[in-house]
Every structure is written in structure tokens, then in C-alpha cells.
Image (tube, rainbow, N blue to C red; front, side, top):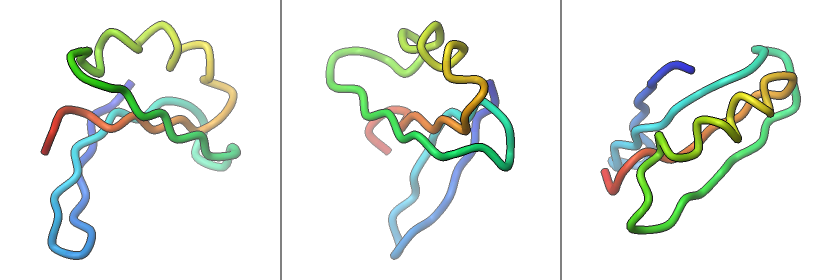
Length: 58
């Protein structure tokens, strides 16, 4: 699992990424108060895909 950051329309987004670069994309949105790391087991299970998980409130 790798951390990434991107700026979209002036908003900085932090995320975790797992899986193959050319796989179908899955976006996971966690809610408060959970942290992105609590979803690590789910991300690992989606490794055949390309999964992104929004990290934190930034």
C-alpha cells in the first residue's frame, strides 16, 4: 500500500493506493472517526484491482 497526494481544483487530497496499475479502479470512502489504516485488510483484498482510499480530512 502506498500513500499518494493530488491537487484537484485547488483541493489537496491525500490517499492510499493498492493494486495493479492497469486494473479496474475502486474508490473507497471511509467515514469518521475511522482512519484509513483501519481499512488496510480491505485494501489488501482488492489487490487484483486498483483501489484508492481517501486518507484523513485533507
